[in-house]
Image (cartoon, rainbow, N blue to C red; front, side, top):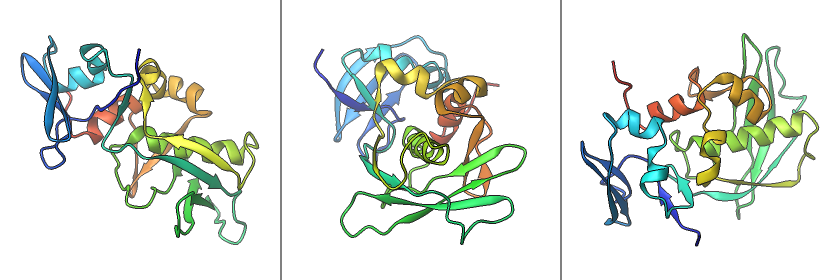
Length: 210
């Protein structure tokens, strides 16, 4: 199968990309054009995305992205003792981009560990959950001595079709196995308490059925 990437987020008219859901069919938009149309049997948009039905509806797509295709390298520092607080540690993440300053990351202790990785420059996209999870996993790996600090690590927004269940699990226990611990992502001033699959759907603007 030839590699092909496509947007998995709900259709965004301003961007000209995404999947347009209607009660009988879905249409895949890329660069302002419909590139594929297919029937489906899901009752609601939430069912379509939560069930990852886009994967089987458009079987020629090998890699999916959510609002951004950002791919690059990052270097993660160990916690900076000059910034450490009683309930949180701070460090630095550097993106392999010209003239890009390092950006702070935080890891807060509480009922659960809450991790706040920085966004890449001009990529403030909460709906790009796979990228944020990858950045957070890089932080965890460095803090736990599973990866060397201050060395380049590759991260990507793209999710291979065969990796969707693993990257977007439906329970916290599955997420802990995948991402190395029972931590949560920060979301602004709050925490993403839903498991990754449900969190993604909400960040995409979807509402679960009553």
